Image (cartoon, rainbow, N blue to C red; front, top):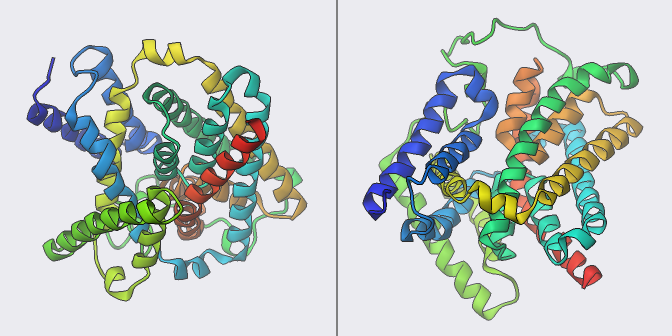
Length: 391
């Protein structure tokens, strides 16, 4: 068993690197995503007894490293870019977020007898993660102080259902086309390029994402920018903790708000690398989540966690596509908007490319980044409401 903090840190970093390399190298792994891959790697290491149950390394990643990921990813959110998303994509995303909130509330009420006081916490976490992706899962889960076993089971269920919903949003536009208005204007299909073909710049569609490049895309990074981003991340953590001590609110809310505000400042917007650093730090966290995914412990928590998560996703889909049909949104816009809410900006971009709607990739990324901003607030609001309703 590897117990040395240095060796364990090296192993976690190597697992994250392998996930990124596989996602960059192979089409099948692009569809799965590095985050799910590294969770699987961590789970294999843990279930084969190669790493310990607890370690100071895990505590460091759960604490300051994850907080840095939150700051860095939120620094990439330029609220002015929402104009590029367009009214139809913004409307679709609003429908998807409202659907997530309604689905989580209903699921919590349905499972309240089975899950007890875990129901409202799970509803808050699932509202967060299905309003903008895994960043909000981490933020809300930490704020609600989920027990480690529940955190692990919820993370496993979340990743499984996110993958299932990715497949659903790829196929639903094909199956439901006759009942929805045809795509027009920005959502109309473009001629399909050969699979994996590069454009004039030498990049493939999976590497293109407009002004917010994919973490896998080449980018001009400067040491000065990276050092400043590290300093900003650490300073904002200190300020958020101090603010939570003297003012109402938990530190994650303060950290989210401060990162969003600081991220709009022109000097900060000129810094390069916040998306890359944030994605790296978040995937280190996912390796540790995988290490905590011991089959015996997950089964001990109960399969009802999976049933709860599946209910939230199913209701989200029914409400999103039902309301979208009433307000006459086309299927591709709805699907990309739903994927931006459930999986975040990267899966929204992947879906747009997979559906041969690359012109929806940038709007999908924009609303996905908006989901980073609103998901934590929505998740904590739902948890607070249900805590009062369910006692």
